[in-house]
Image 1 (spheres, rainbow, N blue to C red):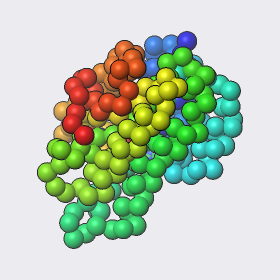
Image 2: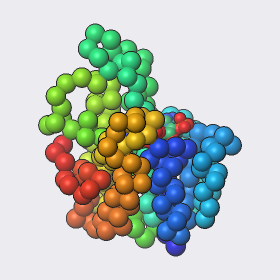
Image 3: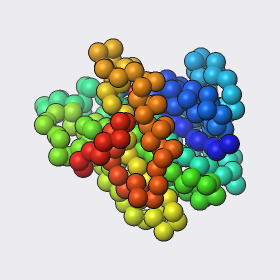
Image 4: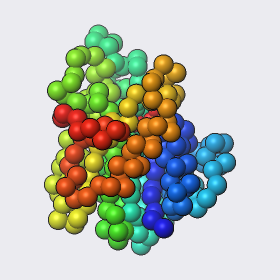
Length: 226
Ligand SMILES: NC(=O)c1ccc[n+]([C@@H]2O[C@H](COP(=O)([O-])OP(=O)(O)OC[C@H]3O[C@@H](n4cnc5c(N)ncnc54)[C@H](OP(=O)(O)O)[C@@H]3O)[C@@H](O)[C@H]2O)c1
């Protein structure tokens, strides 16, 4: 069966990705900061291996890449992300918090892609996925949420560069808006459940071909404006 590596697997959308790929029989490399205390993740059955990974830590990424050296990976899902509401309003923007949001939402996915590119080249599917947000769309931006919006807009830009740079290797690089999803981040009022969001993305990922490289997609398949 194919192999998928997922970041931020402890809860929310990442946890649901682990559930659905494990249920489909995939080999799942589930990465989270504290595997020992990730209760829900530890309950998932199937071919699931847990790894400790703080995506903000370049050395941690490098050491995981060394540990997994020569293991083919079919799909890499950069899901880990943060939203820091206290730094989102005009007049209250904290430089320190903004830099932290950039570190996790923008830089970490690209460092993951760099580190695991050899594994993806060895895999069959060659799919590099990043979970962005429609809040990162410059065209749809109506104001506010400075740190989060800009971190995801920059992630989109980085993924577009990655799509160009790796097209010759046959990679398929896509950024996904998962919907407004009922998680700790999305809150209880969100209209989409994690199973609905993830089922949509898993189905689309399975069908992606090279013509999808460098696209920005909604979880239902719609193409979103940059
Ligand atoms: N929910 C929505 O409505 C929505 C909408 C658009 C986009 N998104 C995006 O979807 C992704 C998942 O969001 P979610 O709703 O599932 O959020 P969530 O419930 O808050 O979960 C966030 C996940 O990211 C992990 N994480 C955060 N910082 C990390 C780090 N430095 N290293 C490793 N893991 C880290 C968390 O791990 P810990 O448990 O260790 O904190 C947790 O597993 C994010 O990229 C988010 O921006 C969500």
